[in-house]
Length: 113
Image 1 (cartoon, rainbow, N blue to C red):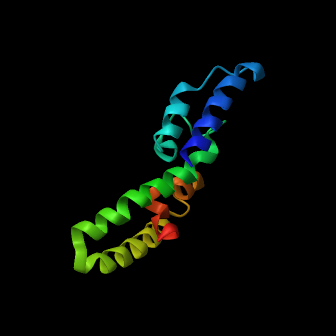
Image 2: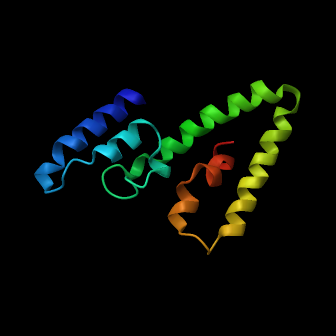
Image 3: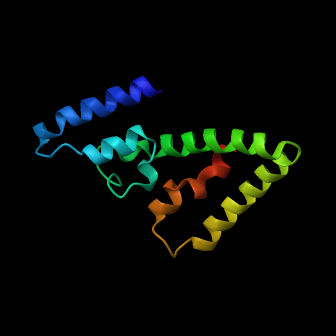
């Protein structure tokens, strides 16, 4: 995934000036660091679609750490995480922008689980 992402980011940075946009260096950095879904510099534009990679990478970091730290109780913690994510989405539905609910990892980890 990372070589493809790197190629996409580099190609995007290269073509931005051709379409009258300055290179979005902070958006590119957010995409490469898998922080697009939390970055104020990349909510729209060329790097918008990398929000799902950010959520995926966050789950790849969170779930193994949960398994290591909680060992016997990891399954319970993951079920609690799933229920908490769903509860957060239901609680905040209609009060915050849909893009935040769709893209923020703490609202989406249940989808990956």
